[in-house]
Length: 215
Image 1 (cartoon, one colour):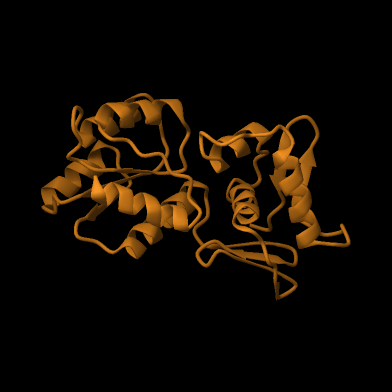
Image 2 (cartoon, one colour; image 1 turned 120 degrees about the vertical axis):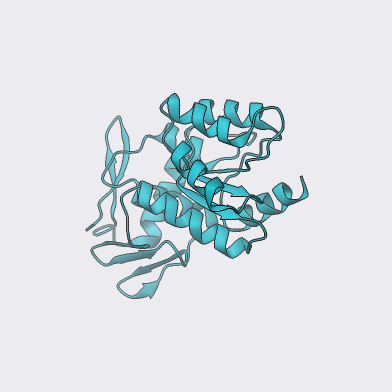
């Protein structure tokens, strides 16, 4: 329980939105109900073992990246975990920075990005360093503005609806006003391109937003 809380706080410090499951039943429920960017699963979960959670989710077509985090370090356990459907395997003890790097890599690869750098014309975004530059100059974004931009960039060229952005970027218990996303998109566009001529965020009328990347 203490480790789960530590991971929660650490990931939130790096602007992840985190749901915490206390046992395998709750983990299975979350995995079925929500389309996560990635999941961290301990094998020794109460009620339903972690491997069974992964196996059921994969059998039901849930394809988000899964990282196993466990004290079981034998190579046989690793093989079993990966063959069950996990994408990566990290053993305890570990460094939080390694967990973060592995999660970022899993999310990147699941979105088709081998490199952490995404570009669109004069805009260059480094998803590892969480930095954005426009014509070589650093763009100062709030944490939420950055998350909006990164999510659109990671999912390019797909159109992302306002509902999907809300689901992935908000805590479940926060108020989600209908125009909040529009406000953040407007701020982002002004910060990225005050002249309004070369920002990469496109509006697809009636559908949502699309990031126009060079990749």
